Length: 250
Image 1 (cartoon, rainbow, N blue to C red):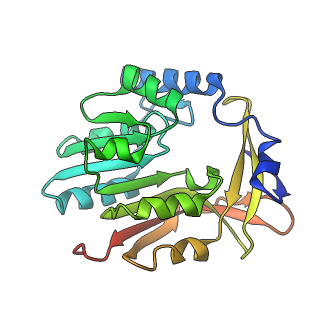
Image 2 (image 1 turned 45 degrees about the vertical axis):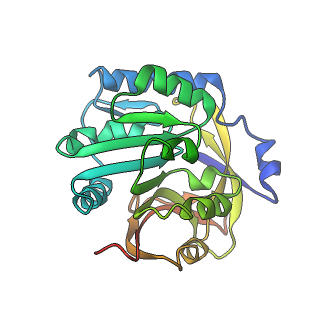
């Protein structure tokens, strides 16, 4: 991935980007997920296919813990979860428990997801309210999504009102300094042609969002040793945070 710019506003950065809603991106994502579903590949990440399984053990640990504390039932709300990549990658390790996996996405992804990808466990919804009419998720997963939202703290604040037992913030970009920045991310052409606005977030500001009602259970680097270089003054890294609601037993 290539990164550039220190844009004053999200709109300024957006003007330099193609965005997420290009039909070619959805089509490539669908084809990749279907190959995994049909056993032609082990898993996919950002439409790139892999021949050997690669489970997200850190994520699985938290999910199994949440299920254990909920009498063996796990209901995940995967906000911005594309076509269910996280579920498809890890579902083999979740077969022994009662699982629901609900993905919140843009309309085009919902239509494709429910028509071609969904099963009895995986389902796609337009918004959280639609999901809550059918399911009661106890885990909120925000995997590589907050940095791509124009107003990440506003969205996070709204999500927090639903009092999830566990909140997992995964593969999220944080800056090395106090000043948050807006950049443009250019996807390599070998994956697909696209560019997006993205935040380099401030970790302290994000943690302060959870001061009331949640405790930090654990944190770790998503990709240890990997650094994003934006400019001579700014670098970033991917980090994971796991929060537990205060009234839930450890």
